Length: 486
Ligand code: NAP
Ligand code: G3H
Image (cartoon, rainbow, N blue to C red; front, top):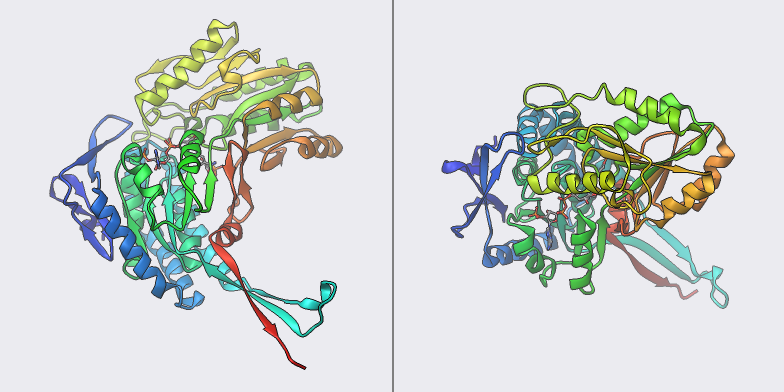
């Protein structure tokens, strides 16, 4: 099933205009495994002319695709979900090797993606327009009626990050195509193989030629060209705040949907169930080595229960399994590359140098950073503010809930926060004041379930995702006004 996307020498092809095309460009990027450095494939660094062809194909395909009934577009998603599950084992192996994700999480990413596709198809089929009578506005009567339907936007450029290479590609593609758009997928370079396999799944499901095209190449090289391409009608980007900010600076008059970095706080009050809190902090902070946008990235705990919480978190961290995801089930895996590991080590060193207490970890073997916990982190330390995207958590002790809110809101980020308390009034008091997209009460920060709205404020994003929200973001209202003469 996947043979067509690969040619000899382990070189991958791109799906353009319904064909798996061998790049004419002689330049290839080697994809090596973060686990052991082994070569797992070579992807084309596509030339500008090839990118242009992908845009032409997408434009032409979209004009036809938008007039296909929604129920038929939805059928492709149901089929793609079935095919994805059929190849789950094969794709899991590729994902483990390509991004070093542990087996359980890789498998669950794939099954979650199949659920996402089906739910997207169901949702699209059940969305309806509205008719608005004119007489609710002063001076108008019922002879004027606006019939509001939804129109696709055109060609959606979907740029996905390395950490959920299947899910965060499919969660852009599925809502976009069911809304009648065509999509150009530019997967993260480390994550491209998963992205290309996903494209093959859609192709096998019968997506018409050009409705889904793929582009590979380094974002630092082709990024500017693709985001400013005159053929782009919408950009759906997930990745770092740094790249997201650059895209928003250089684009013009193209709507953006962006999910970016975070520094999600777990706020712990004195009446919190500390066992539940510690379990959520450890699962939320360390799974996939903290390489999740919604990972718990700082703990703001009131002084009174801080010692107890530190003990419980430390105890639960002993259960984290560290190592090679190809050999065993682990929580802590090597980080995606040495640059990422170096960055985490810089933050660890800065916290140590400035006097934070190292409770657990702090050591590194290659790109594997052991789960690390610091207590008494102060606001002059980088770890209090920067997103490590690695397995290191700072504990910042606070006087009370108001100081926790103040510090939480001082962050440039505003993705999610968690509040642990048994007092619903305090939970709402804090939730009301936090400047974030979502507040979790007595649970770790997390994106799912995927039909909930998912958004970041401040430097954490623009616009709202979540199944219905994504379909709405990638379509626009079209008003046809009936003027009756009666
Ligand atoms: P990244 O370096 O920003 O890359 C994300 C995507 O952007 C990749 O496909 C990358 O391609 C591409 N890119 C890089 N430079 C570009 C440019 N100049 N123009 C256009 N595209 C460009 O992020 P990452 O390392 O993959 O992911 C980690 C970051 O993503 C973290 O900050 C994390 O918080 C954030 N994230 C946020 C969410 C969320 O929903 N809020 C979800 C997941 C991740 P290359 O791979 O070729 O460079
Ligand atoms: O990395 C960012 C993802 O959108 C987070 O999803 O909370 O399900 O891990 P998750």
